[in-house]
Length: 94
Image (tube, rainbow, N blue to C red; front, side):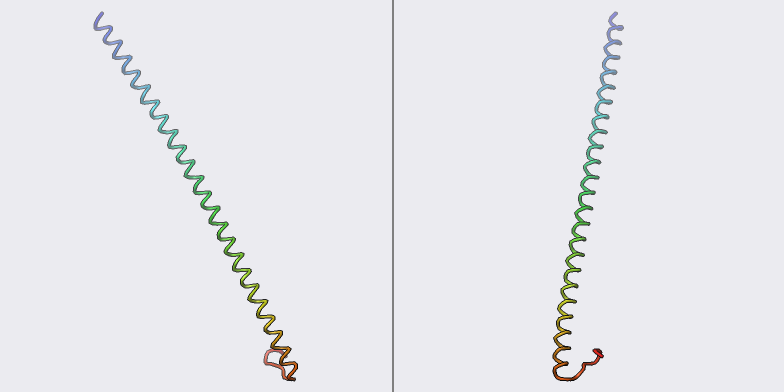
């Protein structure tokens, strides 16, 4: 009877240990999945932010080039008007 009770206790102890190990493994897998999802979300957010910064930079460059072209066109028009008044055509404006 004592040996039988001891065997039952040991079997119960082994079952509890297996349940605990299985529970811990499931919790670890859940934590790892949550961490992976958070990492992926952070990567996507960083990628979106980088694309936004790049688009803003491209827009700024385009604005800068347009402003520069406008200034050059105005300068060329002033230059051509001045040369027109003096009666001489500058090279390249024929």
